[in-house]
Image (cartoon, rainbow, N blue to C red):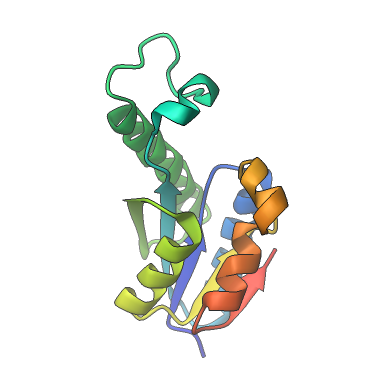
Length: 146
């Protein structure tokens, strides 16, 4: 059935549920490969006052945000490995979340996306729609919203 499953992960409780469901789906599919992707937005001066990434030592905000994203995706990878999933890859990308997820699907031959219904999105999500909605609309493959 599915050979490659992608889980976009932002550290939210719903994205943790998505990892768990993807592990379950991978087992049901005879051991499909699992890929976890964390996408972070580039820091802008407009958002500087809202940034919570390492407020005690901001340094270069893009570097801090990438480091944080690597920690986030690492926790998801460990969660999958602790559950017995050995075929797990983890990636970090920067930029618009929904578009990066869909591009990753297209570039890496993903068969299924398992995504949390609500993540750590900004107020923009309330106004323009959530990441899960956008991915569902744009994705060339099936999307399971958890």
